[in-house]
Length: 390
View 1 (spheres, helix red, strand yellow):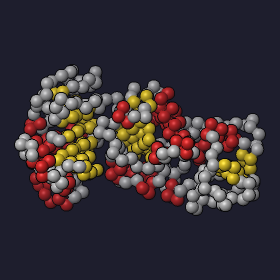
View 2 (cartoon, one colour):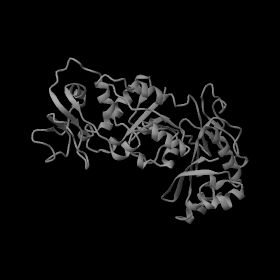
View 3 (cartoon, helix red, strand yellow):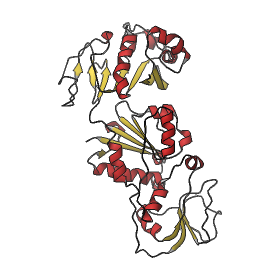
View 4 (cartoon, helix red, strand yellow):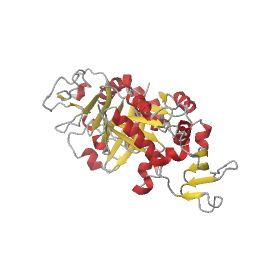
């Protein structure tokens, strides 16, 4: 069992009371509860997480190095990019049409419909005509089809018939009964969601209350967690005395510890004494490699990076690189007498399969192709995330 951190767009809301008014918040809450019911731990501390599940209404900056990252695209498809998807270890999508579109981009995308745990309540008396729960936004128009309208949400002042607005928020715990008490439940979608065949969470709630068969959060949680491998190796190159949690360290100066690093039965990790000038030791099932301030010490850089490429390619894993940025600080690049090379952000162009510098030079130097997914200049350093390309 693993520790899981669930992300939703509502996390960006600083006001804790207003956060309860986001549909994304309750979607995240229901999914988290279902994952917890499988025996996993739901954590609010990303530092403790083994797995991140992003119920994507918005992107996430700075995914951790050590987590298995799952992207579930449930909205706003026009903002999704190839590189964002490639930062994740598994990608799911609520829309089958958009999932097929992503497959055309080379993304191994799983179709995963949305969910609802609402139920029919046939004994509830119909007290309302047409009901809508949601905030106003430009272009949102409600057609009550001649029935009396009842609306809960923010921003509706002056935009509804007299008496239609009932308040800024309807408590989530009573929403199932409210929906059951309505003659007509109203819904709409953002334009890009409608174009790509997405259905928002309200769609599944309405269908469930009407007695239609829809996926439950328990079913979705099981499908998501089935994507998490039982075991994958994570390598910390040049770890020194500070081995990352859950990683196998490889360092020529470190004291060898623990069980054999390749022990897939016990899953134990430790440190292997090995000189990275000779590339990686024989290796398999690698999902993550971290090279934190180590590549500037390596003479035989091409061999080491190519070994990393070969180790990661079968799993589609990723490498996280941090190096001194000579473009910002010559001192950071060269003050250490054991540094044998300098890096700038442009150095990654020679590794990037999509860049002319790899196509014209890096390939002829012998570098295997990488896809550079993220490149950030931070203080005196450059942080890069890459996956092997074919």
